[in-house]
Image (cartoon, rainbow, N blue to C red; front, side):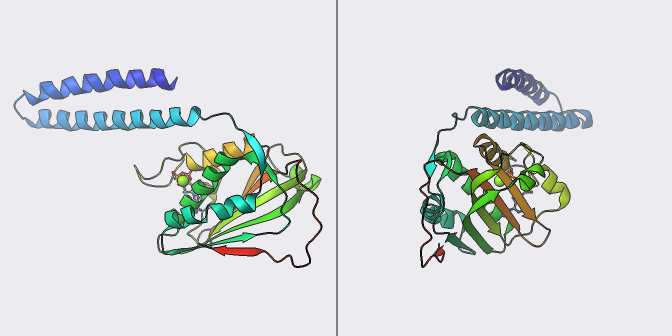
Length: 248
Ligand code: ADP
Ligand code: MG
């Protein structure tokens, strides 16, 4: 469908371009000037639609997921340098790794791009700077918890990854729509509205689930729950089991 749509856009843009050429040979009267402006606007809209189509195609072409056992502490710590560079100097990054964390079962590349997508949103929400905290924990989702959810999530053991920012937060209307593809509150050319639909699609396809806590002015926390891998070794609690804090 995206390809067919793009073909139609090519025809529309071709026609608009020949209108432009014919208008160029016409002496400039107020009517002609107005037609030129309209032609220009229509052409720009068609160009934008065409670039959205390529993004849509790239989004749909994604490989099927390749789930493997993942140490989320290690993965998050490994991303520290990349994230700190993405966030800039005015945002402090802190990663709190819980000891004895179960292995998660997920696609490594998709999990990394989910974390980057959430971090970029956090950066955009903190234009004056702030703090980004990444934290992990083991989580049991019990019957009561999963029954209250709108989507089917089996009860059981999950690895939780929380990403919290101190940014401007979200109101109810925004929160209700964040996972919609192409939903963005950022200006034209700034947001694609595809970041969180990737994160949502990834979490659902992994058999996991996402929870968002956000209030205007009070920052935002994303909690991603990924199913525990069956390869997780039962660990005896360490005597000294304080979390490890990594700063970017
Ligand atoms: P984009 O970043 O391209 O706008 P996303 O799908 O990543 O698209 O996010 C959709 C919208 O959700 C954003 O435009 C923004 O309004 C809101 N949002 C996402 N993350 C945050 C955050 N950490 N703080 C405040 N608003 C957020
Ligand atoms: Mg985004």
